[in-house]
Length: 437
Image (cartoon, rainbow, N blue to C red; front, side, top):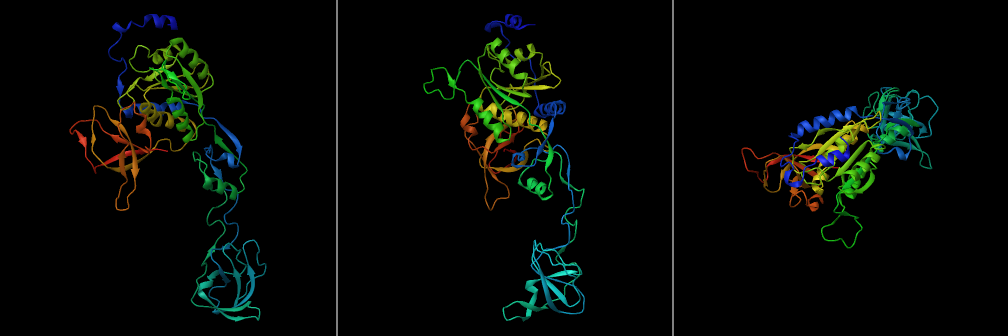
């Protein structure tokens, strides 16, 4: 059916459906569907220079060491390179080996070389004695050491890093799926890696739908209209997770307008996130538009709170690559929570992350939480107390899905079950939570 036919087929308000034709599926099933979608979507990689611009990108292959680390024997302490068990506790100081300035000679019994941490251990030496474990027994007039005495016995191999003892040539130093941070950047530089393959990040576009929306910069908002906060909020959310999402701006609830907007965006985007138009309102056209565009609805409702009408559709849209549309509810808390639970893990999967989902932790409740008819993801902030084994979770105000204020300060989503054999979870009880950011 074309757009006009679909619009004509839509019944007048008095005859519209009073119940959704989409079954609300369990969260576990929705997560499995999203996992399978992620497997089918294209992962592209590219070779990039190992520079500051690589930070935050994901390794697309296993990077191997090009040499041993350390390359030669080096000291782990400031002290003296000696020959252990040579029968002499008194050593003649014959030279110095500093980091970047080696001693070229060969050590003989009864001799030692003063050495610094990281200095190359001279040939013939079998151990390094710490300076704290020696006494200077002879010196020159200008205070240069001539002789030292060992205060205790030193075994062969003490305080020496052997070649390849930390990393051998050919060892994996950065695994595929690893996010390049300061530590990874450091080891790449330590081994002189100049280029490596990283995954390209998916193209994500955010679109806000609704006749009632005006610019966030509007000062005099007409009665019945609201500033668009979902668009800016979700663009910022993706940016927090390292994805530079595109602002697809606002579009009215008109069927043709939505279709035109999505048709254009789907040509250049991997993931499209829309807000509004997915519930039971007479202007909620998103699902019908997606079907008209040839997309397949993977699920149209999820048994969760907030976010019951959350919808996900996929299709190739005339290309070889699978596209995914996440049509989220228009209420700010619903859109924000659903983005964390569905959009971020999907984006991470396409971007090659080894770990795609939020870390689960155990927290202790600061107050009672009343249970409802659906599993709920309650926004909360954590407090760390020295005498507590678990972080304390404070609910961030009224959890109604329209309350954008409930998102402020939230750094976890409490996983609260639906009401079954009890009415609430009591203060001080332990619950699971998803750690955000």
